[in-house]
Length: 118
Image 1 (cartoon, helix red, strand yellow):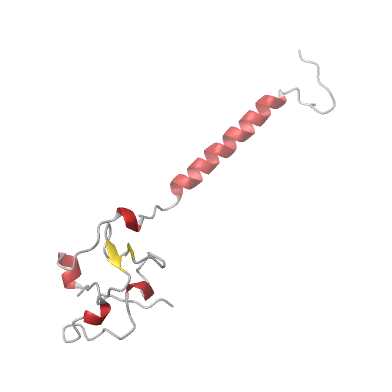
Image 2: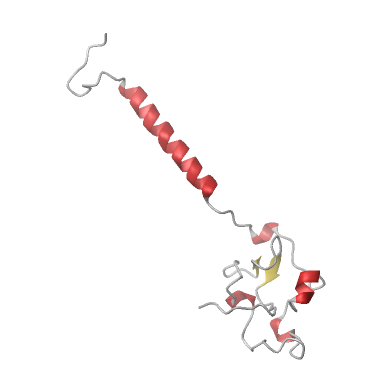
């Protein structure tokens, strides 16, 4: 039996205790990182083409000033993807949009589903 001193009353090896505490922390951190939602980087995404079927349905244009106002009267001057609630690109020129998964939209673009950020 090991001799214990006052600082190690339980008799457990302090290096083992440190290892187990570190391993537990690492496993917890790995689980937390794995549970976080992954965001696609705009650089990794192909740009949405205005000829895409969903893009055409929603009237997506890469330049908001060229929105078809006759077909989509909901367009308002100043609205673009950069100030839409669905745009996730921050201040980037192109970024992911929740409406077009797997594609990057132009921050200066617009579609009929535009929902201005609060």
